[in-house]
Image (tube, rainbow, N blue to C red):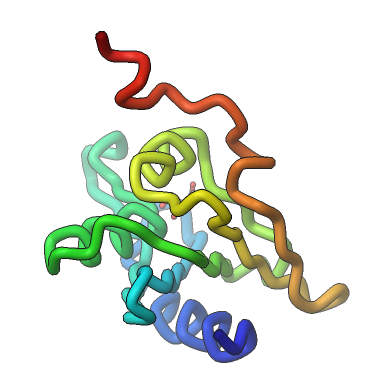
Length: 131
Ligand code: THU
């Protein structure tokens, strides 16, 4: 997987961001186990708490098309600085992250930054916790 292409996909998705309240645009692009790419943007709402982040938009698009595991997720924002997934997204993504899933971010000064998903969210609440 070419990481630059995935970052480009995330920036294209960011252009569709609906963020009239925060004016902070976010885009995400993930790669599923079979190599399919799904993208998403943040979508806000007049009822602020009803907003959905870009990462979850991409993930629900993938799952709703039958893909339950991702290998990479690229995240970018209009700040053009490293944009990490929020806590809710970390938990949500943990349900579908492959064992060696990687988060790819972009910063105009430093370029591409990669962090293993299990490093930014090491101990998720998972199905193993429900017994
Ligand atoms: N946002 C995301 O889309 N992803 C994140 O991981 C962090 C925050 C969005 C939510 C809201 O629309 C805006 O960024 C400002 O918080």
